[in-house]
Length: 394
Image (tube, rainbow, N blue to C red; front, side, top):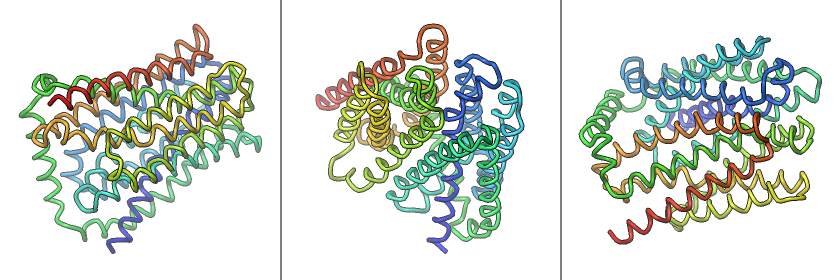
């Protein structure tokens, strides 16, 4: 039963990743068909992110009241219905409307499952859990590419993913009795409450007074801005600026997410040997290499595509390493509050930085895509190394 429930949780994380790469893969076709500016993808992405933030903040109360299993089933069902809404949309306003339940469903299930696995399973499962998110994020661009090359259109791609989500919802619904078989879920509520009390005791002002916290927040902001912008705008960059076919671009976007997925998997085996600081440094070096290949003057499309995949591989260890290093860097008594603020910083980068690049692409030149990514890579390396110096002196 232990292993079967874990497998179902992995399946749930596949469902969480499935919708995430669809918008970026399909947008070069969507914006032409709906006759809206290229930059409007950032608006849709922002609506989804805001919904995710709201549902994440509400997830503690929802989990206590309705339990993790039911929250998971309901959330996946919401994303399935939202994707079905995307598939029947024929205007930008309709897409914006369906982006609301899309984001609300994603945030609640993410928070609920991460908490459940952290409490009931060993730490290595938490690392590999995100590999399964990457599996979903890697599969969906292939589904969209199949729909585009087969002449079915982007609506059909969303429909196929919606059907898959419906099937996963049914599997999760059948598994509901298994969730009750684990440890008493009142323990989850107690742990959540304890975390909230710890966060409130320190507070935002108290956390920011701790030396190095501002630096790690900027680093986290830069990372999430880079990863989300790279994934959302890669397909449009290759199609609009480099003249690549939309279906080929969609396939390489899936390889970008596959690079993140494989990197998460590998990091689970080497993290204890290398340590968080080294993993962040190696990840940033790999990202720099990928950006150089992506934007090198005169580089072929193939070289640029390879650069995109390398960027994804370099991104993989940074997010979990920053989170994992927080208790050691700032003390276990402060870590819960600081991690909460890090999440807020992350969602700020995810919400607004792809939108900002959308306006740059629309009003200046989408060819600035590699330079935009490079700015955040430099920001990360400067802030993280300054943090390392502060911690070394301490």
